[in-house]
Length: 215
Ligand code: AP5
Image (tube, rainbow, N blue to C red; front, top):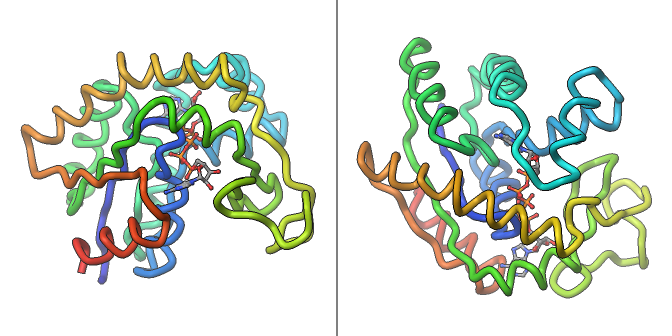
């Protein structure tokens, strides 16, 4: 599938990152995750990272200006591969800006996926999420376990709980999603079709359903 452009939407913890990584691998796309880009900046303590961290640790969105800087660079790097965008756009300003940027670049979105999961299931899932800060692989103490406890299968690094996965912060992120990000789904529905996927089931079955739609 050459030069395909996919946006994947859904609440925090719905499985966007998990499915986006599989889709990117299957179709040879770049996986553009604004959350991963920001966490990298936080870990490197860049000016952008220091500013972003104050919002991320409270479960709030970082400023649109920071995000636009990251997205422009990421789209340039993915020009020859196509991409799946995970975590962007996050509000209507970002959605409008993405439409404008893509129009200027002569590119368009081919698929918008929306993963739907109940909030209480999300709170339970995120309490068990563990991530590898070094190679970004995402695990779960229930559904995707590492072979050795606490050690990343891919790189041997220590896996950790994300600071924003504490329950209070998850609930704030869900409220922010409802207020600011859910309207983005309607924005896309008015312009093209949105493929809604039930995200409560088995990870591989959800991936098989998405792969069927994309093929
Ligand atoms: P970001 O990193 O984008 O976080 P998020 O959107 O809140 O999404 P998550 O990464 O929490 O969840 P996910 O849907 O990817 O689920 P996952 O696949 O990991 O953003 C973090 C912060 O950065 C934001 O709060 C904000 O501050 C800032 N930010 C980022 N982008 C921004 C933007 N554009 N504008 C402004 N601010 C921005 O799965 C979750 C867990 O469940 C994992 O453990 C996984 O293994 C497991 N799992 C997944 N699917 C299943 C399944 N089907 N069954 C069982 N377990 C499953």
